[in-house]
Amino acid sequence: MNTEPQTQNNLNPHLSPFLPFSLSPFSFLPFSLLLFSLLLSPLKSSAQPAQFYSLEYSTGTLIGSSHNFIEKYSWRGLHFNGQIFPIENVAVGFRIGYNNYYSDVASQVYDFGDGCRIYANTYRYIHNVPVQVGVAGHLLPYRIFKPYLGVYLGLSYASESVMIQDIQIRKENYGFIVTPELGFFVQFGKNSSTGAKVSVAYNYATNRYTIGGVEFKDLQSLNVNIGLTYMVNQKR
Image (cartoon, one colour):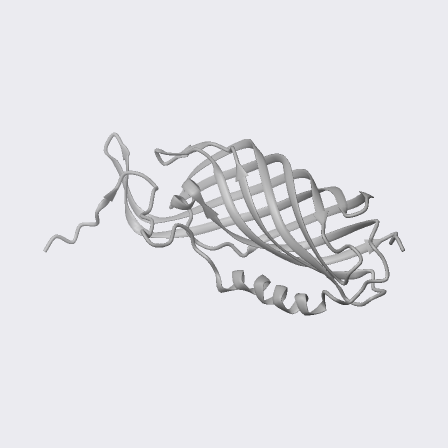
């Protein structure tokens, strides 16, 4: 029996024909919180915030062509954003984020050409830092439960790397990113200046890179964010 490992000439794993991206059970938590928050929607808040700031824990998965590179769901992310209300129900603001996507691949043979072949595990990383500005429409600003729909635009920095034993292949690039986001805030009480925020965001960035002989034409991800919000200068 031939026990020689098969040669892998690139770094592109096979996708499942049934699931184009991976999801974590954690992804369903926002929908549970949404149902609970809807029960609070008839309750009135004491005021509409004039501005607020939130710090969020971010999880997510790569989709599109980048999912060929890393399939594993990521639990490593952090976002900070702030918004002000120049007019009622409409907020403008900024956000900066960080997400780290990682996966490892079982040992196989990699052919680098010129007779150079290595049999080893590989470790793959994508570090993504978006810096964006955006606008959001808030549907119920005077309620404890405050749903919103927003869109953000900005720059996306990305670093992609592969470790094969002590050999590292690393690329850096910049792109334009657009992020539609759907979410909601829940105040901790009628007169509270703090609350929780939950959102689901789709990110499309124009970052292009070629690594391991495989070209990726964009960087797409689906993220679930949960965090704490502080509201100041409330309009009564």
